[in-house]
Length: 239
Image 1 (cartoon, rainbow, N blue to C red):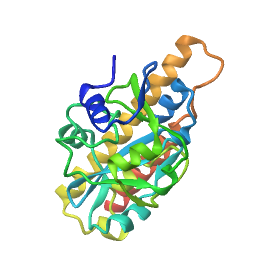
Image 2 (cartoon, rainbow, N blue to C red):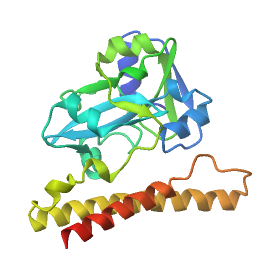
Image 3 (cartoon, rainbow, N blue to C red):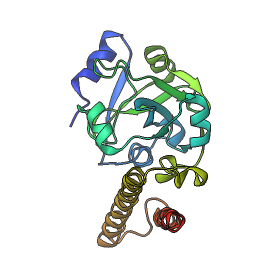
Image 4 (spheres, helix red, strand yellow):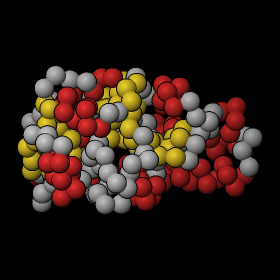
């Protein structure tokens, strides 16, 4: 596959030098970093958050994760959470899920872009190009001038972002939620964790089948266990 036409058109129109990079299928920014032999600090990860019901595009290094408490302060919104897969597909319909490029798009022009301060690097930057097998290498300064993102601090070291903590109501608010609202929130959280678990089982199965010497990345099963325990605690508090 190749980078999508609209990505090439934007870069050509702005006369920005770039190089298309084609790699084995990668579903996370850290996968892309490994496949392209780029430092994770130079691979831009895009995370979509919802702030009071509106999408926000977050750009941070592949080696870092979003800290929700910091993000809430940055966005100054009442309801801040990570977007669901359905919301992402609805807002960014013309790219493969999980491969959103941090570039201006005619259908995304109203979506604000916020870059974590840690993303600033000298020299090259790698961004995904709308598929799980394509990326674009360009100069960070060129990308920054093109996108003009708002710069804030909302991340910390480590590439594992908690899934349901962003959506779960604080303990002192959980019992005040209407039963139907709480149940919908709980089921959404549970499905997100089960999705992570399914992806991790798929990855581990592939590892066993290939008889590789080591796992390609740290297992996320401890995160799954932690999230399921937290959800279980929510149910007990609700009873």
